Amino acid sequence: MHFEYKVEGGDFTLAGYASSQIKKTLKQLGADPAVIKRVVVALYEAEVNIVAHAYRGVIYADIQPGGITLRLVDEGPGIPDVEMAMTKGFSTASPQVREMGFGAGMGLPNISENADSFSIETEINKGTTLTIGINFK
Amino acid sequence: MTLREIKESLNLKVFSGENLLENEVTGGYASDLLSDVMGYASEGEIWITLQTHKNVVGVASLKDLSAIILVKGFTPDQDTLVMSENENIPVLGTDMETFEFCGVLYNLLK
Image (tube, rainbow over all chains, first blue to last red):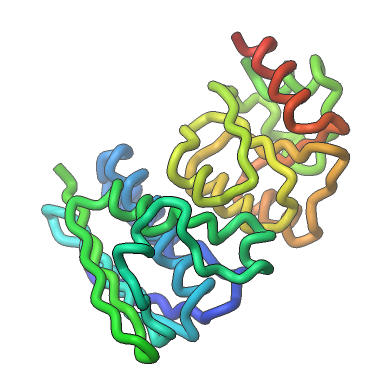
């Protein structure tokens, strides 16, 4: 099964929509609740990252019998230092984003902790692609 | 313990979800950082926060939390209320500050 969701940068009113849809789909498919919880955390963080940092992006979700692969492709500023970005508490979010309780520097670490596989490809002034794999068993 | 018992013991105001007060509460999580709640809160917990925007409902729904409690007399934004009804996440409020509210809730639940 394949799903695509468009995400607009800066539009927090719709942040979490894709995560909510994927959660419903996985529930309907009878996926293990513990696995669904991990997918939801990883996808929500990645979705919010596009809203908070990029101009726009697309989420591709591919559900196979063995697991789910999420690919989040954004057009945006890119990540200058991935290692720094992976550090808990490090954030480049704007003050407005932080006031809402986002941008705490926990997004990428949360993804990493909940994914079975996780990779970041990024190019400055072009964009970032996250690939997240979570196994069903 | 049900949300109704907590509401009555601590004299909480119900902003939305009057029909969901039989929700079972398994514990609490206090944080104003959404990623912190996303990463570490558990299903069935009450979320104690001062964030009033609708994204708290989104997070609470994704995490299957039992309710949101707004502290210090804060009130939810209008679109927060609408979303809380759609997502079946009750939003309640207290005049207490987070520290005080956590203390009394902890004693009530232990």
